[in-house]
Image (cartoon, rainbow, N blue to C red):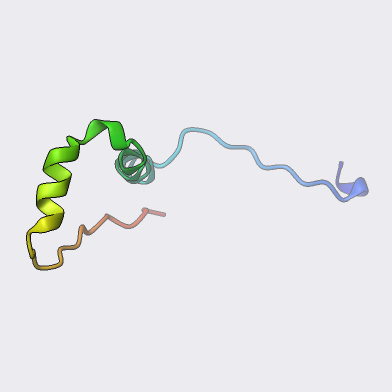
Length: 59
């Protein structure tokens, strides 16, 4: 394979912290999980900015 310029990697189970972060972030793709009236009410309120700190991936 390498003689033809191809490469491959062997993968096993993902790092649990990375997987946890990916699953958390994937939740934001599902708009149907959030009540539209609640989202509209929250957007109408002047809230201070907030951040969510995700744990870095462990080596």
